[in-house]
Length: 378
Image (cartoon, rainbow, N blue to C red; front, side, top):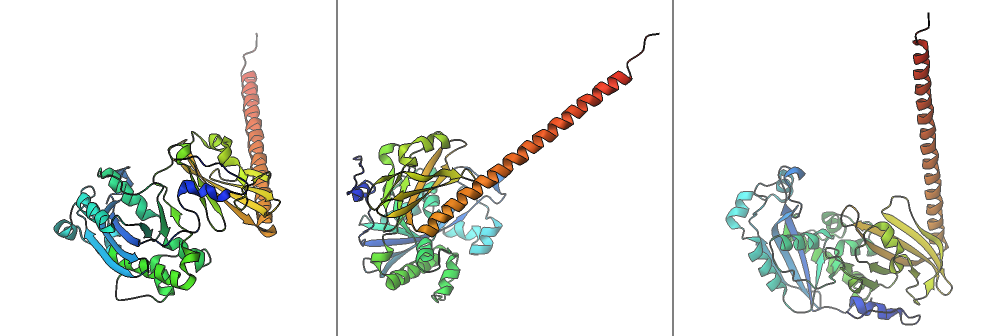
């Protein structure tokens, strides 16, 4: 891939790297799918690390470029790893292992049929939440099927869109959203095809309510496959914020030393900014920063450190222009973090002093006891 260099007046060239800028085109097909999965009936002790959830059902509906439902897909899968149904899965889905064994097919057959059904036309995938794509790819890898998805993989998280445009940032469960929009039909929840159908209904409702030109720019990024090198890192420009997904670093400290991670750059003009508040954290997972663009105002930054293993991490950084209130919130958060850290240090020093006093007291007691029992010369 061609490396993209930032230019003051050509910030949009950044998104040629990630293939998507915020004027996302209307696609030929929208594949809305849902999965049901089983897990170890005995809990985590008997769970396979590479496959914590085994898919037992795939359901999907297809929308055309006019957002009309034109086709559907549904298959059951006979489990090969977790052959005893977890009680919670059985209660929610009302599925029985015997039904899966009698009517289900093996995963490889089903997933290949699903991929073929999705078609080779220009398509985008849509889900309710972010787990389905992750678990589908995890199962694909475990059962040694070639990953059919492009990289980077952009998709629509309909739950996220619902929260952004309708419910003030709240991301409810699918059944709650369906009830709120009065889209309930004589179809149950927690079955793959039915949940995919309801997800499609909500997506169509959102598009009809807010328009595709407002909704479609806000695609999500799949993080199952992490950038393996600097050339694969992902830069995306949305209408009101930018996102950067880094390659893997040996540690958090190494990540923060990387210029592309630490810098604050205005996504409206591409100007590199001096930080008013340097990157800080209160929990070692999320970092915040604040800068000021002379042309566009305050820019707030947020870094999420995502673990790959015990030490290695990759970074998801979002930058968003904000007002005085938003800037004050970052400053207040910084001050609160400083106060908590100072209090923690005081408590730590107090514990150390107390431990030292106890140690000195014990030593004095030993010396006193030794002196008291020391035999005298006759």
